[in-house]
Image (tube, rainbow, N blue to C red):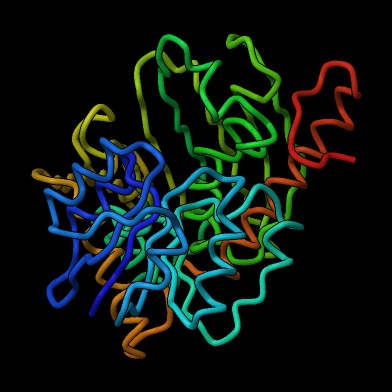
Length: 335
């Protein structure tokens, strides 16, 4: 199976380095020549002159799109118009309304929600499924990075290019994870603020959502965390599941399971560790390959991205209602 790649930055490189067995990267493009040269050396892919040349590559089955947010929908549409399948990095668009303009036709569209493919989340989901008599009460998440010097001058700080701030960046990941466990969530309230960085989009965001079962999801995402951190916790009536770390700068990936005893007191405790390389990229690429082959539906697809972008817009709206026009961060095409 022949794939193309548009966008050869950090994420594009991770995708290219984690190709499944039976897939060959044959064409790549990025406006920065050094990036495409690096991918070409890694995979022996031909360097294209532009995006259209990637799409026209002979025998191409699918394309991975890891470009800036403002270009994603246009590139997806070009790909599906040529009958190609698409793996596009989250958030897939700048807004729900923008993604809604896309006509997916008959193509498989997989969205890059790689956090779903971390082994700790896989185990967490199975634990919940295997204990149907122990319903979720609430979920809470914390996801933040320390950014870097000049962060507020990068493309992510430009509302026209990025679409929004931290909520649209790391917030989409935790919203997607929670929606796997609580599929009927609605936004109750949100609060988005620019606390530190000199930019017009949010650098910190909080929200509360609730499922029709009554279970709640609360989260805080931040680009002024200073020490990168990932924490995703699920509380049921009998257990606490605590997923910590994503590898690399976020620390070792672990899942802590605490099970309450009938008499209460200190719970029984189990720790699962997942050392080694981050396999989420390889796992997700493989799932996309299986979806293209018709062996499974895409796990984290077009409709999942629409749902998450709907959450994002609702949270921004709730936050703006609390703060008013003057103090609220910008997001793309806000009313």
